[in-house]
Amino acid sequence: MKQGARIAAGALAVAALAAAAGYWAGKRHTSGHPEATHQTVATAGDPAAKERRVLYYRNPMGLPDTSPTPKKDSMGMDYVPVYADEADEQATATKQLRISTEKVQKLGVRTEAARLRSLDRIVRAVGRIEPDERRQYAIAPKFEGYVERLQVSVTGQAVGKGQVLFEVYSPELVSAQREYVLATQAAESLPPAGSEARSGMQQLAAASLTRLRNWDISDEQIKALASSGDSRRTLSFRSPVAGVVTEKKAVQGMRFMPGETLYQVADLSTVWVITDVFEQDIGLLRAGAPARIKVNAYPDRVFEGTVGYVYPTLKAETRSVPVRVELSNPGMLLKPGMFAQVELAVAARGPVLTVPVSAVIDSGTRQIVLVQLAEGRFEPREVKLGVRSDDQVEVRDGVRAGEQVVVAANFLIDAESNLKAAVGGFAQAQPPAGETGARTAPASTGHRAEGQVESIDAGSAALRIRHGPVESLHWPPMSMPFQLANESLRKDLKPGAMISFEFVERGPGEWVITSVKPAAGSSIRSEAGAGAAAQAHPHAAHAGH
Image (cartoon, rainbow, N blue to C red; front, top):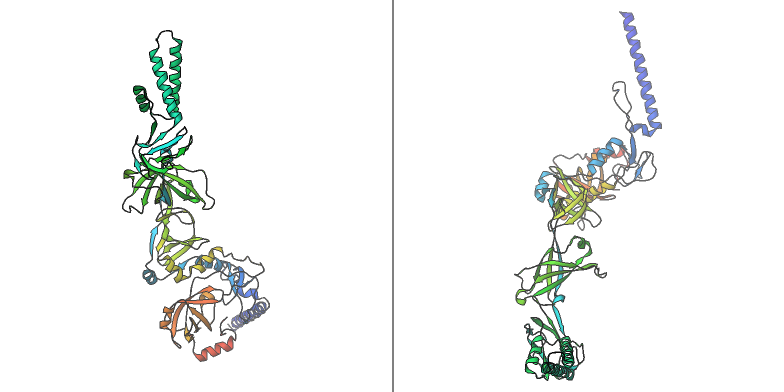
């Protein structure tokens, strides 16, 4: 028994010596190689344990500075290692916004599912009423003469089809009438059979008749001339269509030359609306598409028309293309020169994935949609948009059908949870192990802490808080300055108050408090404890960063 006891005691002594030697060797190895402090080695008791890979070392105060090797900051604090598994979790958390259920209810957050639908669209533009060019007529005599008498003497007067506009005197016209009458009478007086003279008179009469018709003398006037046998001194010009006199150059007694326009008459029973459509919308329009027209003169009426033609030219000054809309004009209500509001219906290409327009947060350089992952948890996603309707917009990439997107209070969520920092995580690339040079640290969406208010700046939103450790940032207890997100947070703050607060990093080294409430139990140590901690860590309780 004594011999067994001696053997057991010797074994215990050897084991103790081995453990001490191992501890001394590990301590020496740790002090000589700082990286070893951030690695977990496999032990005999846990064969499945694996070595954790350090990606880089980040600034302990959250500043945008990293290092591929261990180092200290200007305050003497060690840089914090970032492991591969932690970086993946942090990258995932960076892209998400977490808001308490109470705040979600206060903000009035409302979501709607993204879904497939036919996205009918309305293109709106401003146009002007113009006469139908195909229904405009010019009255221009084809012979020289004088205006003998005006029957329609003012511009804008409505005229009927066949109504006399003016009477003219022309020596050429009188001569042609007499020639036609004499030739006709001579042909009738000569014997009908085999007479060359009769044939010649008939040809002369036909030539005179052709000249009168070429001068736009109506068949009615020619018949009256043939039946009476008397040439008339004046000839009446009539309106070829029912419409409105849009131009009148004729003055009583004036001389006119062949081809000179004396009157213009427009038929306004059908009018055009010429509207300018912007370049990005012109590819959606087709001839025959329906159009709705409104004018200020008749706010309670809507005129229906169709797209008649899309002009092939682009106005470089306005980057727009003229589009012609044709519509009837009952009662002549639409006047040339009026301005009109035009709505052009564009047929949908087919079902596309859409979200409400209010769901898109547009920064000018990117478009963001907040997707609800769970109650109080949102993920900002960058999306690519397509065509728009009045209240819906096509999403070509970034959201899947059925996902819930925030359609109300999304801008309030932006302010509440610092969406800018969350969106910044989209482009944050983790520096590979061993790469030199500074990298931007991953953005954070929010942090929690408890502390005591030391001072408040009455003239600004700045204050100083002595807070406890912040686990999400690996901060020790310290005293540092903060900013308030808004003035409403100041009501619960006064020097000496113990508070629990949430804060975000709005910019490098700029920490902003987003919510405050009285602390149920503070993690701030007493003055004595804080002094002891300051002696143990002389750089921990520095005044800001």
